[in-house]
Image (cartoon, rainbow, N blue to C red; front, side, top):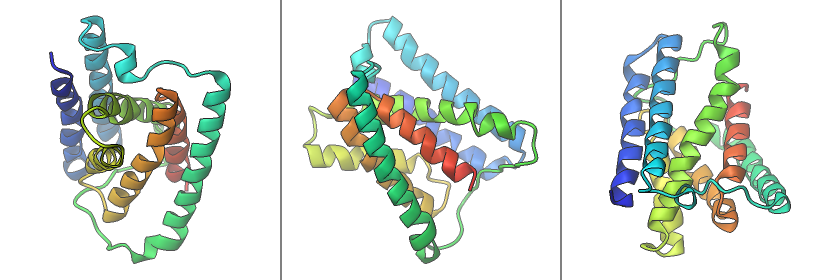
Length: 205
């Protein structure tokens, strides 16, 4: 199967998954749908890996040298935390209010601790393997570098289409921030760690 077709198949569940933000208000049910979506995407990609339609390089699953991993992860985390502070504490009041849907988080739910730790690891990995790993691999020879940044960030942002304008802008900016480390190391792991940290901070604010 063509890699561009696999990319489309990998994105489609994410875009459909956002309907849960509109129609599902029960937190455990919402979390179950979200986990099922993410696990199915990972399973799909590993199926194509097993079928040899993809390689580990296509998904950027290689582990970079320790020094590269630490430096790129640290740098990406610093830039991401600087933007998070800017976005949440300085720019937030200027965004229009309201959204089509929302994430029905219930901090009193027994699953919240799991969801805000293990669940966020799943979020980081499942989104980076598609939005940075496979996307950059498929598009890097088809687009100029600036356009590669913009298109990959836009695809990532629009996965959150049911949420607020603030969330869409944030996702786009983080999508830009995560690209350099991924391209420089040919690995999703610096971005995956950073993605988890960003989400963990936002979940617990």
